[in-house]
Length: 457
Image (cartoon, rainbow, N blue to C red; front, side, top):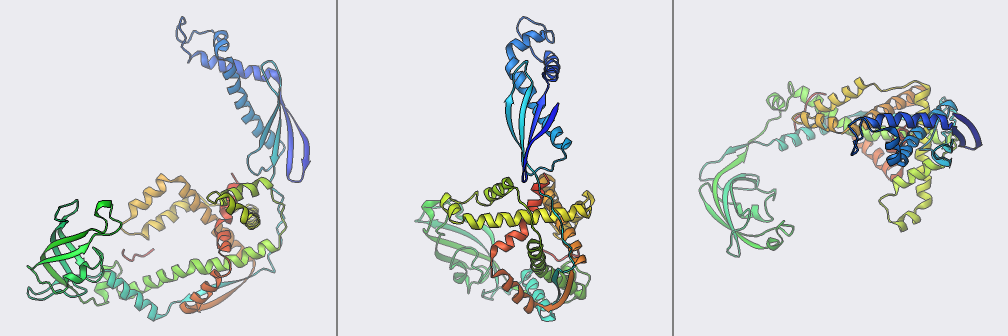
């Protein structure tokens, strides 16, 4: 095989590749021998069809198959021999081919640019340390207690009020006729939540255990049976029981029912949970500061095919007129994403950063522990979706790169409370949503280029 650089302009390189016809013939003969064991033709015993007969009947398709395999193998060999770092899929231009001829083709390659990293000494960013106020923790505990409300039976002569739980059987008719779902048993409704039908709860206020109550209401407008939508309906409800909410004390017993050791432990877990909710947004602010400086302080030539590819992905759901209207803005954003991806990739490679399979598995286990009762679902999700594991690996890789950059720059620590955090996050989200997108997708671009109980976590 003969490989020559035909031209090189900017990031685009064109290679000329010639594969000797003798090598092609050897590959043809090898394939014919393989097919001799597989092909069954009338008049010949299995495995005894002469190669010449196979060639006479299937020669063109066999040649195409052989050439296709040769193109794949020689393309990879040519790129590796010339030590090219490709950006995207190379283009092949066949110049000469056919049985008895050399295979001659040109390989058009867009290469990744050489990225020269600047020193991070002058970079500045702010990291946030959040203090969760006791009031916020108490409010969260009260919210959890309401979500885990328990009920106890009322006396038989006590009437139902808003907040009570009513248990009943019903039989309904629309225009005097039964319909699918017109009967139900053991229905439990917490009055005031309006979870059954609009206005249904209010009509049950005042009922007692053993009562039969006739309710007049409408079926919902979005009822799956169109002929029943907004239909006036009569419900005959037989009240089986009425329960009132138990008073919940936020104490050690309550904490244990939530999976914690005691109330102190539960408060600690709640504090960590709240801090985690804020930390994602606060970390994004720190990352934006870093990313902005990375972009500003580095000049990188960008392969046009990657820009076109990124724009295509970004705008695939847009109408043609929308694409044209925002053409310049989308191109600018695409370039920003690709540039950040190249820079982050270079930082990761220069510092030999890697994410092991053990680290990915550990992160999945961490997520499983954080979702009690849904462990099997989380595990199956990652087992059935390899792309999800790959995405998780990319996120862990990003964290490593960001942590490395933080260790090299002037990083100041700012202590804030939740009110200050909310103000900072609101201000951050105001200017431009595209910046958020840029932060979230920079590492995914890099990857393309490289080809309800509280529990302890």
